[in-house]
Image 1 (cartoon, chains in turn red, yellow, brown, purple):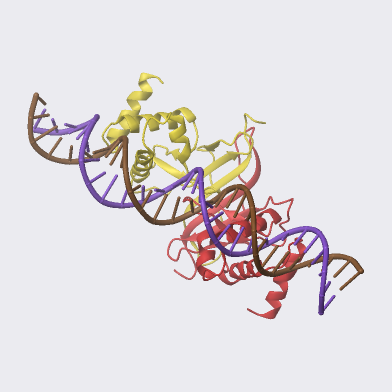
Image 2 (cartoon, rainbow over the protein chains, first blue to last red; image 1 turned 60 degrees about the horizontal axis):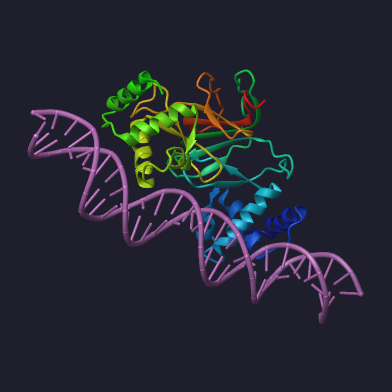
Length: 142
Length: 142
DNA sequence: TCATTTATGCAACAAAGTTGCATAAATGTA
DNA sequence: TACATTTATGCAACTTTGTTGCATAAATGA
């Protein structure tokens, strides 16, 4: 990882008023390196068991609270997380996310440049947040 | 529950080549009565602890396999299930589902009559299944 | 009613997530 | 740079959730 990226990680933490610790930097590095969405169990594995399970839980929760990451809906009992784009913030996190899960490689990625189409809800329903999870085959696995 | 509904439950089970047992009938009744999506833990509670935890797991898995129910993506560690429409079947379950989760009452429902719009994926991506989860405020809670 | 198939419930286990508390590390200030 | 204060971490113990094997019970077809 380049120094430039490392610098931006500390900037991210500082911007959220979080102290800079090994765990937080490492977990953010993993997000950046993976270029996609990670599930909870990945962190303990990827980090080579270098930090405690509890710390991972608390770190991810902190990042969620601060709007640094967001969770992606899954149909199993895992939770997947991905880095938020810069326009996410702590108090206004009503983005419309599109996520793509590849059935071949298992990777989940955010399709940041794809727009969420308008959805016609029945009368009386008010939408707040829209999560779209598309599964299929990704560019690499095709 | 009316006899008519009870009769249709046994029909559903028979149509999937499943033997008719108390557990299966009861769980299907809960689905119909709830008029929405239930998460795993609900069944043990709603059924008044009348059957074993293991049985619930196995029954839901069986219903999933047979295409009687489908799972709904969530951003937590729970799995939500909902009854499938009649056009779902065991081997062809590639529907495009829209689910609405109310942030007030917590209920999740299937919006069967709402169509999933076309989504423009980046080049090279092939979509197989699309899950849309809209959260907001439902008709009743407005 | 009976034999066969299938589902259920129990026990024991494995995995995932949580809480309290003592220690260690990060931060701001002098 | 050193110190006091705040904050994060790691450990232990625990709770909850999900799984597996096996004996018993119930459902089915003849």
